Image 1 (cartoon, rainbow over the protein chains, first blue to last red):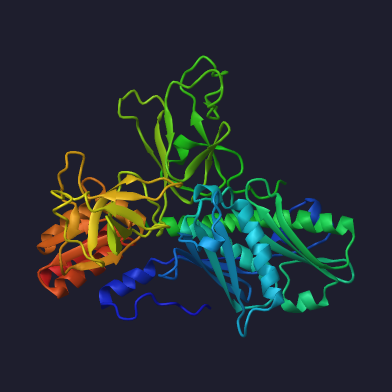
Image 2 (tube, chains in turn cyan, purple):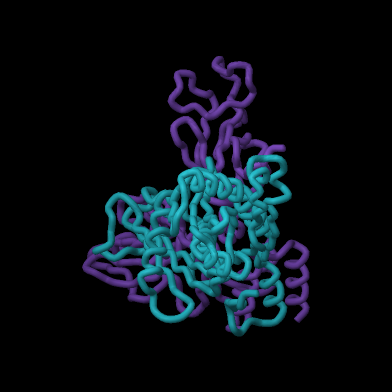
Length: 257
Length: 270
């Protein structure tokens, strides 16, 4: 479970209960293996399933939008600020400046974090309608709470929900899916750290919600073109479930008002 | 066995989606008003550039955008619709998305509460919570002349209206209406409490015949100012009452009507 972030330390008693009821806490379990039916995916014997998903939105009071996303034991907390004031040196005259900051669980951000920041920023730039807010900055701050595999995918999902929460105009939603290829050719979706270590190759995709088109892909390891296509197809299939989860959790958030 | 239905896949008719949650990237269809180009089908995508213009004028509000001849959602929230004022109701009117965001984006004509952050020559810089501070001329107050400057200090609260607000220009505020009257605008007095809520709550509170406001008015005598930028200034007789009001208003957002009634009855008893 996530550490609950309290908005007000001292709050009169009757309100505080009501206030906490307001937060949406949505959980879902997806199993692609069973629902895939007789499609291509199961006939190839992927038997893949995504881990347990959970998300909470609007849990921080200071940022304009925030979300925490859990995929199994991987958890990321995101705050989005924007459209806010921008430094003159970073100002872009015809669109918003997008900044992504990835904070590791311990220590200072290194090369790996900077690389992930860039990947996340490029993905977000593809979907955020920056031209509607020129000369402003949109800052996305991601805090890794725990890493148990598929971290980049989790970061992407969390960033998307936080952007939605902040009300940043977007072309479409996006999600991240990580696939791992076993040494014996099997495909694992949403791998854990152990599965990632054993894998021959790890592929992470970012997909949009309108046409499930590829926004970003990053890979590590050896794989063939056919395997890449196979992974992409699996990721696209999995993205349906993630987007359905997004819809459920957002609907629950708005059901209160 | 088809894969699970993709959320947001395929355009949906805007009418059937009213009051429901829409997500960014979804496409909406508007029922074409009975025009000659209506090819037999009841629903068609909104065609803007086509030769046959739909008779009903459709206005895209916040959270929606036009892309070519399509109507796309850009924000998450509930889809709302308002019939055109002139009657008729032939499929036109305003569509918008009611989202619960916290960040304010200046809109022309909005009444907001700002904080004076700087005085420079004949301009004040006012922080309204947008991406850049708004400018406010010292002449834009009731009765202000070159000789008779308004008494505005850095840190004061200003209730004003936007006269210039677009994405490319610095927003500009005034504290007078078109007749030169203050009309309630100007510097907000001493004391009181300023707090921030989501923009959705402000819109709810400012809606005509809002129950919350009527109930709150019965509770204590109070002075209250709502800024469309999510700021509320409230002042009651005592600090305790002010704090209670602020907490109740803040909590109102996520309460159901019954919960709210309960709280109000408990407060009026004590």
